[in-house]
Each structure stands twice: as C-alpha cells, then as structure tokens.
Image 1 (tube, rainbow, N blue to C red):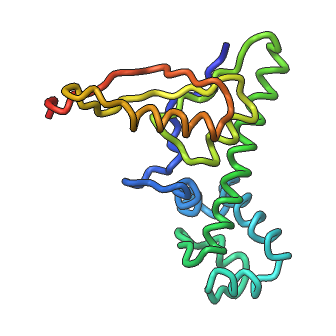
Image 2 (image 1 turned 90 degrees about the horizontal axis):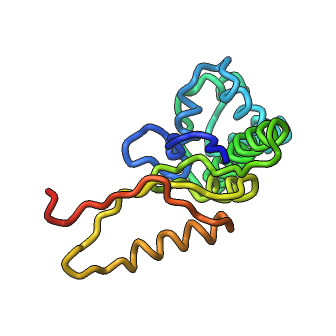
Length: 183
C-alpha cells in the first residue's frame, strides 16, 4: 500500500494549534496564493458575494473582498465565523485526500491507501476526510504512560475516538512511549 504523506501540520504551525489552525495559516499567505484565493472564493460563495453579509456575520467593517484577502489574520469572533472556518477546512480535507486517492487509484488500483501518518492527532475534519478516501488510517504515537499502574484507559479511548471519526481500520506506524520517570 501507499502512505499519502507523513505528519502534516493539520493544526497549523502555531504553538498549541487548534482545529482551525490551518485556516489561520492560510490567512497568513499572500493574496495571490492559491489557498488564500480559494478561501476568499469560499467566503464569497457563503455570503452570495455580499461583503455586507460577511461583515455582519464576522462582525467586521470591510469595504470589499480585496480588503479581506489582504488581511494576514481573520479571527473567528463568534460561532458563525468558527463554523465558516470549519466548513472551509472540511473542503481542504476532502480536496487533499480525494485528489491523492483518485490519482493513486488511477495509477495503481490494486494496493491499499494507508493514510497520511497523522502525528499522534489531527483535527476531526481531517480524520473524517481520511476515512472517506483511505482504506486504512495511519498515525504515529508517542504517549506518556504510567508504567507503575499500567493504566492505558486514556490511550485506548483516544484510539477509539480516532476510529469513530474515520470509520476505518487503524494502523500505528510509529510507536514508543515515555515513562513518567523519563523527565
């Protein structure tokens, strides 16, 4: 089978990234970058190309869409803005996994798609998109374990959560653990 990639920054590059971290990273891009253009087109479509509707929803006062494209950050100040961010990122996930899956299946339909080796975790939208297009979901794990008690409940729950999102077999492709005495 094929791995699509390895440990992409699904949460974005900022420390303590969030479910919408990749949206934040896209906003930092130049206006002419394809990802930034796709984001602005998505927002235009959401608001029927009406900057006034966008302004109302996002609580902004932009004169036009060019001004929105020029922003280096576009904070989600309310639930509607966060929903827009998530919907856009769901499209990103679908485009990423769907495009790669179609290309690989066209070239080699007889092998498995083994996911993109998530770095221990990824936003929920990424797990769901991977599950729609991959045969197996792969991820790397380096959990902290309490070797004195041997309690693995939290780790087990985390893996089940990944499975419920992706609805595909799970494969851990890198594994080690640190004991609580490792410092």
